[in-house]
Image (cartoon, rainbow, N blue to C red; front, side, top):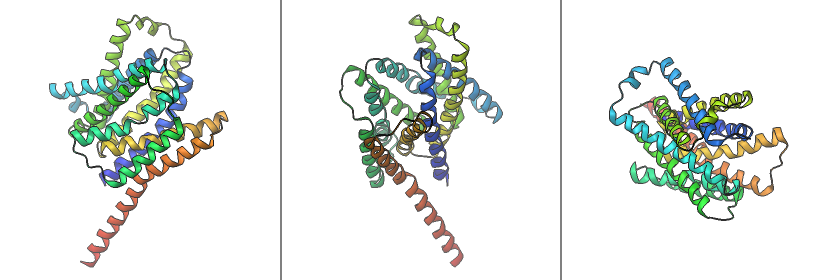
Length: 304
């Protein structure tokens, strides 16, 4: 039952992710990406603190041990700051196609880390789904080169995968909202330090009203993303949760087609179908098996 809840939450995360990427494509135009990410992280941290107060989880936040605070700081470093800085720096030096392909391999690295450090079991169904997802990713992006920028993006992707693995371990004792708050709060602090050291902090004081509006809009998406993802990750293995997120790419493309009239090439459409098939293996088939098991237990109980 808990895994079913986790699946539903992460499926919702994938939908939010696809919509958020579409919205962010407008928001980042003419905006320093480092300043933009700091502002989003900081705003979401404030929102999450309000949510924690609303959910009456503040006593749990207040009673965090030094070890737990250190773990949350590590989550903020590995997931909420350094990889963003690496990714957006490298994105200026390479193509969006190469960046997209490498970023979408996150679930592979997450599965590897979860297998090594959390002892998660990777069954044959996930292996088949991973092959479909990688093939779909290739048809979507078709990487053309690999150099230093691509290596930085790959490193950022691996850091995000490591953060997801660490977060899963921390979620054994903490709620999803508190872990999400730690990621956003400490992540924003680390990015602010970077901005100060690189003399970019002054740009925080010259924002236009349009930029402020976009920060608030995209922060709402990010709030929904981190809250649903970490709440779902608490009940779901890392390798499944990160694989389901690939569903966001087809959603972004569908929104681009619906609102911008951008046609989907045949090769990309085939990639979408492969991704949908991979996600179905992880989620749809899982729901079916869960339903059959539940009915079997119910029938057995009636017979007894």
